[in-house]
Length: 155
Image (cartoon, rainbow, N blue to C red):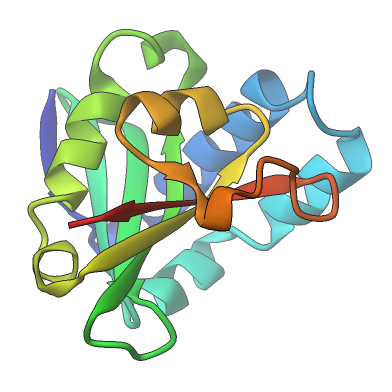
């Protein structure tokens, strides 16, 4: 597996990876309508727009994109950053791809300059991020609006 910066030419395939991951991995935790709304907000065009505002990466198995993730300043802060759009295809989950992706994001300049890093974690992925050292923001263990957890890590 190799990780490289996202290129706008990756947008269609990356959007498909996100859609497949949401429909399979997240379907046990979220209703179909919510998943389809999230998929629409991660279209190829939206990913290209996002890549202009954050550092985005793709993880590949050969020529195939199997996951993606991004990091940005948190509301323009120089001391806080946020991980966003982290997805790994279901068939690669539990095989080190997600860990490798997070480790790459944690070497990015946005991570290295930050004192605090936040991640909005899905109900599905909260256990994974906790294993990666992220904890509930302000100790709040209830999901926000019943949809996601706010997790954070301090450096």
